[in-house]
Amino acid sequence: MDFAMWTSPSRPWQETLERARWAERAGFAAIWFADHLMPNTADDSPDSGPMQECWSVLSALGALVPRVRLVSMVSPRPGITRWC
Image (tube, rainbow, N blue to C red):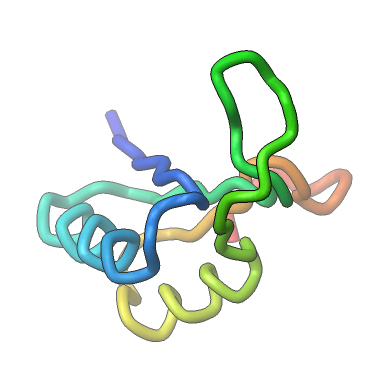
């Protein structure tokens, strides 16, 4: 069984990197990152809080945490079922 991690795009970059490094050390297979452009709120109302951009984060994690697979949660290419 493979395990994967999802980390919120509203968390700071340093925390995202620390979690990804932990997941790599712990043997997780993948890290999923949402490509939402607004933070989630309890009542689904819009919020203007800080957000990390998915593809930039995945690119940076790819350079710094090379063993785990990196996956966008929402915008994969149609017809592609394999992890990138």
